[in-house]
Length: 122
Length: 456
Image (cartoon, rainbow over all chains, first blue to last red; front, side, top):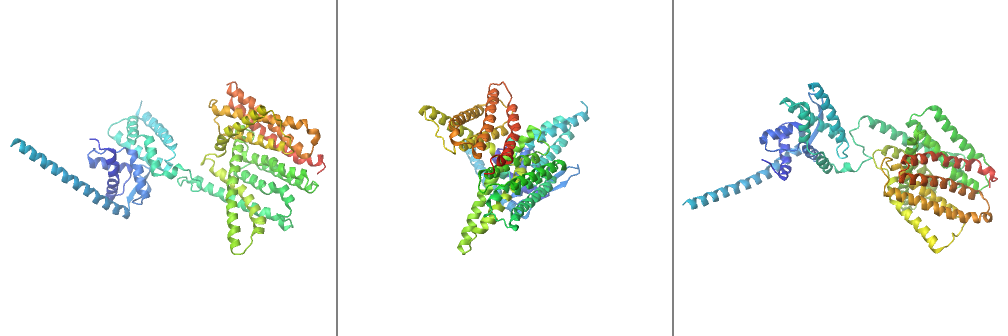
């Protein structure tokens, strides 16, 4: 299943912030986590994560630091800030509102289909 | 292919990928490091599940996404990076940064020295505004030795060459001050005008730092000179604004600063501007696009148009050239502008690219300038007995001949190039080889003219 670009772009901020709220992480690990959580349904183009991270860094929602990983390479780790947590809570409220709305309409649609089917058979 | 071979070739491929990424203006080298870490992690993950190293590389690159799109995305997030910044250099360069700081400190130090040096004669009772002749003769000696010193230091030049350059300045200082010039005479003015030109060659030798013998080294010096000129003009404009504000706001509280500006701000600002301008050109040469070639691109077609129209009008109306005293100087200046336009478009052109429309415009410009100058020279030659040979006229005539020879041979070389009979580097070489001619002529005017014409 392909999720459209706009949806991926809109959801990238809460997803990245939420993953960083779990623990500090770096690009590749964040992407792996997204893949794991979505069951492979959300396919991000790997490179595109980095401009998102840099934007969050500029907005001070995350902080970055360079560390030497076990492999001996330098790696850039990101950590969510208190501002980031506030932002995450806000995003969460908004997404829940969207989710609730959609859920409501899906239910209404399902009911209508069911009654239509009922009246047809009756 | 063994596993080890594959690993080696993957390293090479990563190198290539990295250098390809580095060319992107919006992606800085820290970002490249971050992306490379990602790529390597991805490759490691893929080889763990059974892919061969080179296959893993291909998949990892594919997953990273289209580099153009990625670069665009980075540019959108970091729009400031598309404007190359000089004042705030990218923070990801560790080692060169310290060097840049030393460089800046030395340059500002030299600017301060220049400011002090130009005020030293005042200790001996020579006022900047009153002893204008002394300052005019020696102006280049206050700043060019410091500039030369800067480049000798920066290029780590041989002390022997440094001594020769110093000797040139000493000789110039002696010449400028021992000749018994008649007060307000034209040989004095000529000497003051030509000395900086002759000494500029000394700066050039220091600038090229051992590459003066190569056309490339001299071409770099030409580029440097053009950029420095533009920087000094810009700094001077800023200075003028600053000065205007100083005058007006202090006048508002009843303090008159005109004397201070005339004897302090103006001379000190001018010498400091040359030193700081040189440092800026050096510091920014790889950061900001050169301006001089941009200006030549704009003005070459315009000058060509004006000259062709002028020649057309001359033919159409059949009017002779009205010979006035300053005519020769006007045409000298015209040739200087045309040579500069030619020089700075050559300096920015890739010698390997094929002749194009702009080259044709360039040839039109050079040929029409030659024709216009020939017409003017003809008119002057007809009446030269009437005017006589004053030092000014001989100097103007000499300069005209020098520029004419340069342009005539340039036109021949350029037309050969357009007809694919010659290479562009021939033209480049001719221009860079010609540089010493200007300096030698200037030196002749400084050294030989005053005694020849009896110091009038």
